[in-house]
Length: 298
Image 1 (spheres, rainbow, N blue to C red):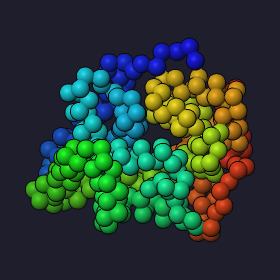
Image 2: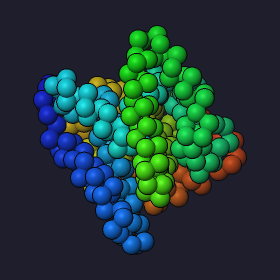
Image 3: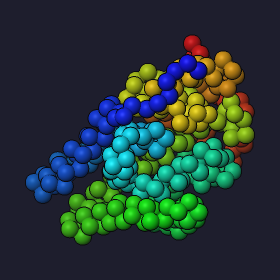
């Protein structure tokens, strides 16, 4: 592959998206007492949108940093974690477990047999807050082996401590922020479900779906090219479309797992929700997501 794989010193497009959170969060805190009901609702909706967009940045940052200078990398790791409500090191460990097992057996975030899409997203979003013991135990064991316990504890203190402090300071404000985080995380777990819809963790050509939606990939930094991302997780987001074409030529992108729809397209949402009903689901080797879709190689 004749392309540079080095990340820029500062990834300006992604930093610009993260800057939206830096603008929204202080405004959210400072304007709360001066807003009426609908103004507060509006700020929460904007916060959810900013969180959802920032998750694309957080995800990429875990693989290829958005800021190479170490102090900036450290700072943005913490603030991206706060933006999405995830203690950074804890989520980092959880996410790389996902890449190790590719949504298959051993993946801590895998959908359970027979679990509906709604139940999966609710369980995944609520369990870390209300019943975190298994998740914390998993990441703690990993952090202990890799000498990252101090950083893990610090990140929990930053995110959970900040949320608790705001709840104590202004209960309604803090609970509203918590609500924004919960709804945002529900949507984030939906993205994982859609990105592995009818995939097969045992087949290198079927680890993830591929969305070629131009609008989605434009705004979410090529997040639709999930198969290429799982095969080459350290590849910068800019090269994923070309990489997908090359992998397709090597039969490492299954055409039946390629769709022109975005994961947030209502038609795809309905299709995934219907497929993942409360009935047990077998691993799929022949996907049905590709009606009206085009191969990634075209």
